[in-house]
Image (cartoon, rainbow, N blue to C red; front, top):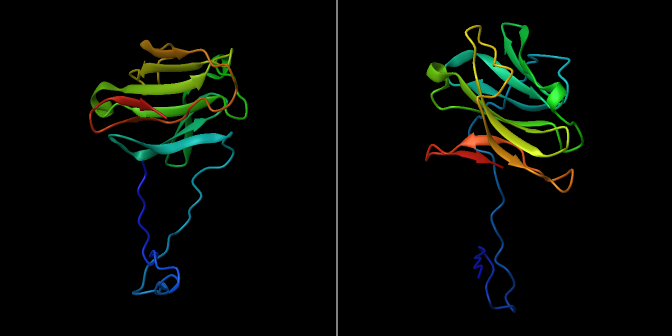
Length: 165
């Protein structure tokens, strides 16, 4: 059962709904600034920072690259393009950094494999900072009957578990 309450909606139909006050601006709010940080990325599906890596942004490209942007430089951290099927809703779709990434270097990736099936795996950073090309372990392998609605982003919850959207 779903219960929903709406302001100004009563059961007395004869009086009509109570009008709501109009929204007004108050104070001076700074909107936001836009700054271009990169060009030429190929279908980005994620942009964000890794814990402990405050001077860089990490980008996922749907065809399979994990890219790190820092100081105007673009560095490929991992290229899975030979293991990724790219389609409208397929490709390299999600990344999550272990909450203790700065210490343990663990990264979790979600992608569509060449058959179009879901894969989630744990990768480890090498000494040079790039991600090892082979996963430490496969966490999830799900056969997908269709090429759409197969999930997306990964995230660690407050309970420390890894979630797949």
